[in-house]
Image 1: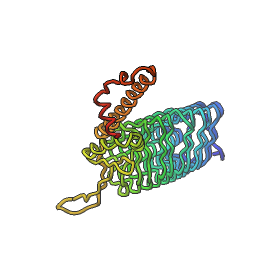
Image 2 (image 1 turned 180 degrees about the vertical axis):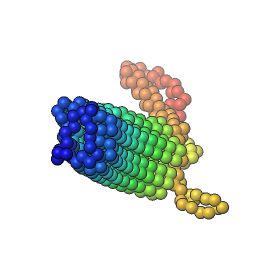
Image 3 (image 1 turned 60 degrees about the vertical axis):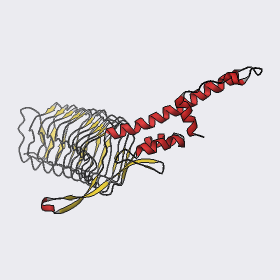
Image 4 (image 1 turned 45 degrees about the vertical axis):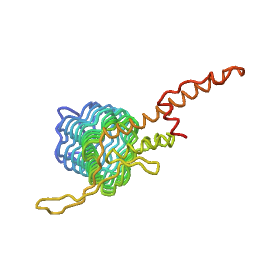
Length: 375
């Protein structure tokens, strides 16, 4: 056998002990299973003009060190590089549109990836259990979904910035990324689904932007170093146990609601404060609206005392009620100022010789009540 094996396509038989492969320029597609379990394969040179890498094409090539995907390749198939345990470097180019399910799963030596902007479809578990993966860069791609378990159990991943095109982070997308410290979400994201960031034990803070309408069940459960959660949208649905067992979390803050409260004249705030006391699990103090975490012991069988639970009791109905109170006072203030402006305009337009008593008008009851609060 020659030192370098030339792969010519469909009818080409690949020896299982092949070490180095060069693709013939005429090859368009890598067949399904073409290099399946070629455990001695170290080096592959793919040809320009290649369009597709088939399902299981390099699955189990446990000695393969690197792969450079040509810019002509548009699709990488299902489990194409699954369990290539020595694969340290994968280079993608603009032009790639699809990475199949589990395509690079269990590539435990892979250290970094840069996702091209042309990628629009990435399969579930695509980079699952890539234990050495430290860096993921998205180049403003067209992805709308971060699929199930796409980066789950990538225990070396330290930071990730979700592109603004992504609307949904799906179930378990980054679950078990125990060294993930920084998660940057962009405007445009709508949903964070079931257990998306479960057990990201190094995460310390998260900012949920105003486009997010739902945080799914267990989304951040067991993020044991999470200290700060900031939520910008008021009508957000927070599902059960979303922040449970976040043992260092003290409270969830709502800066936009807080800013609106602080913009209302102090007299108006007093009316809100009294009503906020009637809404469970909500605190208003020091110019900030927040929901404190609740800690309690979880009892096991036969009354055995187990670990401390950290719970956050919050639902969409409570936030909607709070926003309703704020909106009421904002409208009340605006109405008052509007009526006063009309009144003043009528007086200013009066002839000096006319008795200003003739300019008196009956102030509506709600406006009169609001004025009296400021006296």
